[in-house]
Image (tube, rainbow, N blue to C red; front, side, top):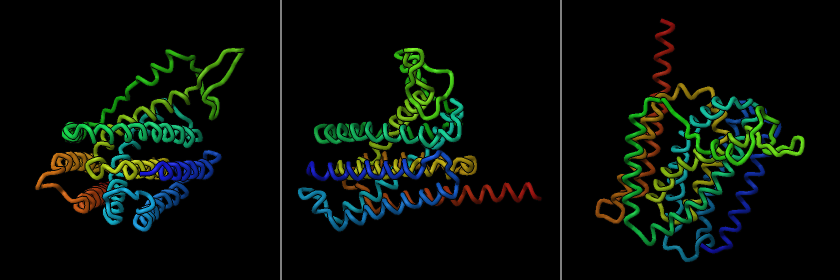
Length: 315
């Protein structure tokens, strides 16, 4: 990739973040509005996939990928990151509940958290790409980590405990106010600087997202090790995450088969990563079909389960 490609994509990302800020101004987001914007971000990702197919030679003139392979890799990586990021939504809900974040402040908290995650993931992707180029055996370490995480997720009983490290660090270096002060992160009172609970919430969100990235970034490196495609898939997956949160906020308890689906996906991707370069390497197109089939099955099964429970209550 040329520096020009990354510069243009960086400007595009900033423009899309600005658009996201504009559409959530005021802090009042209805489910209908969030659903429309979720569809918008989803469609936009596929428009970008179309641009990869048409202009791949401009994006990456020295890449050994064909336009078709790059497009399929991006779509697969995007759907993988999107499906794995859904688990983040449950964590967001726990964070907001634990820190009693007012409803009208949640869009801004998510925005800053996502921006922080974008920057940190970009760094992790750059480092990960270099490491995998020099030390191929790390791919197998990542693969085992993914399989182990998938198994742990399947065994999880739902008693999530947030890592308090970000809050501890913030409270060590700064004084924290007792209450929220609108969207402010830092305020000055009687000549003393304070950070607000919003800063703590944003720190926890960004930290937890990076913890999830330890799973998702190795997973997408099993799909493609083209850094630009990895970065683009992560950017588009994270951009729509805020809107998706508000769509699913009141529906999270209904998707009862989501965690088993995510567990299966992580184990599958771990196995795929183990087989890279062997005679049994799993084609990217097969990975895409497996991801779509798994998530579709989980959603349909959850809807059927919810309907059966409703019928039992009526009966």
